Amino acid sequence: MKDRLRFAGHLGLRAPDRPLLAHLGRSVDPLDQIDALADHGFAGVQDLFLKLRPLAEQAAMAAHMARRGLVLSSFGGDPMHWNTPLWSAEDEAGRGALQASVTLSCDLATLCGGTGAVCVAGHDPNRSRQAQIAAMTENLKRHAEAAARVGLMLLVEPIAENRIAGLLLHRLEDGLDMVQAVAMPSVRLLFDVGHVAMMGHDVPSALEMCQGAIGLIQLADIPDRVDPGLGALDCAGILRQIAKLGYSAPIELEFEPVDQTADGETRMLSRLTRLIESS
Image (cartoon, rainbow, N blue to C red; front, top):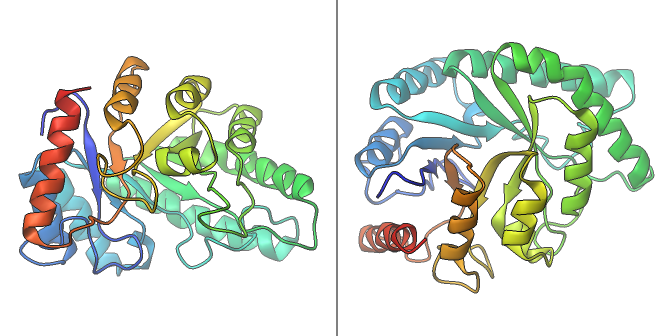
């Protein structure tokens, strides 16, 4: 793939044995998948399950990514609690659990030479949404300086309610307001193209609206988070807008290929190349 726009591939979205290039790699082992991504021109790796891996495996992955010239674009900040109200905790126990989670995230950022942690919170029906948004904003402020010291970016991700219900941030505007309220470079917006489109936004216009707050972009076509170029979005136009805004971090490909075979993964990569060439 051409390097004008760089991509990151995942090591599994719903499970760690279902990576983006499951059939093009020697195996689904993370080291083999890092090789597959590097061999096919990727710039980065996304691993939602990194925190759950043994310490020795985390260290081996960090070393192997460095050898192959890949960055860790992001990992799941709380893979076991991503849909709970952890980030909006106001009680002592909840804030203690959040502190422990952020400390582990900082350790991973140190190990990998900087990275991003995806911050998602569940909605507590017994508390007002406004109060929970305010609490999450304060918790992000509380941890922003520690994150900055180790090169960790706390990535606030709004998620479309018609895709995943029950989460705190289901409006792009709420995530943007939160990032702007924290006003720290270590707290940025995770702009997921598929979710933003499912919220009803025109994606290029939304990118322009959020450009000063974006820390990471994820790409998937709609409906059903399919391969870019197989759905309803003008992905070439979206990539043009991303390039126009001067975004330079890897774009994470957050979908499972529609055709989960080696040939299907090869065709997916070819479509991405054509999209870049036409963007």
